[in-house]
Image (cartoon, rainbow over all chains, first blue to last red; front, side, top):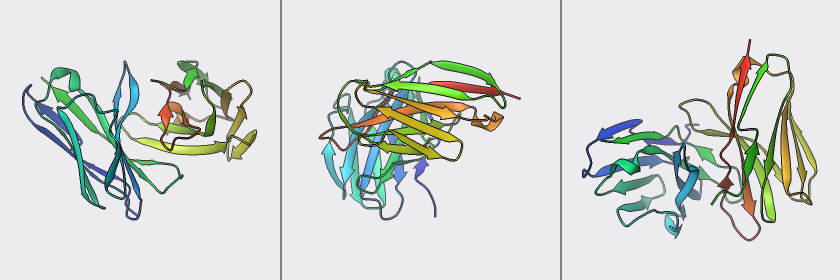
Length: 112
Length: 111
C-alpha cells in the first residue's frame, strides 16, 4: 500500500510568491496532520483534520498560512505571501483514530 | 511548546554497542511514542507505550516508561550502521489526541 505522498519534494521560490504544498494521505485514514520542522523549533503541529474537517489550526503561525482538505484523499497547505522565515521542511501525516501517525517524506521549502 | 525533551542531543557509538536515549515530559499523558527519522525522510513510528505500561519490546528496541518521573527511555541493542538516524519521543497529553514532539536525539553508529 502506498504511504503518504507529498509534492513537491523541494520548492525554491522568491519572497512574496504563493506556495502550495500537496498531500495525499493513506487511503482510509481519518486524520491528517500538517507539521513544520526547523532546527530552531523542531517539529511543530500546524493544523489537523478529522474526516476532512479542520479541528485545530492553533499552530498555524499567521493568516498567510491556510490549509484545506476538499476530500478524503487530498489536502493542501498554502502560504501567501511567502517570507524567508517560512523556509522549513513541511510534513504531512495521516492516521486512524488513536493509532500511530504515518509521515510523508516532506517538502523542503526555501524562500529566497 | 515542546512537551518531550530528549537526552542526549547527540550520541555516537560503534556498531554492536547499545544505544540509550532518554525523554522527559511535563504533563500527564495517554501514551508516549518513539519515532525515527533518517536524513531527508519522514518520521517512522517505532513503538508506542501506554501510560499504564512500564516496559515494551519490539525486536532490538526496548522502551521503558516511568510516569512518576515523567520520563521514558529507548534502548537499541546491538546497534548497526543502519540505525544511524534521529530519534524523537512524542507524547499524547491526557485529554488531547495530537502528538507533541521533542527535538530529538541524533544517533551515529560507526562501522
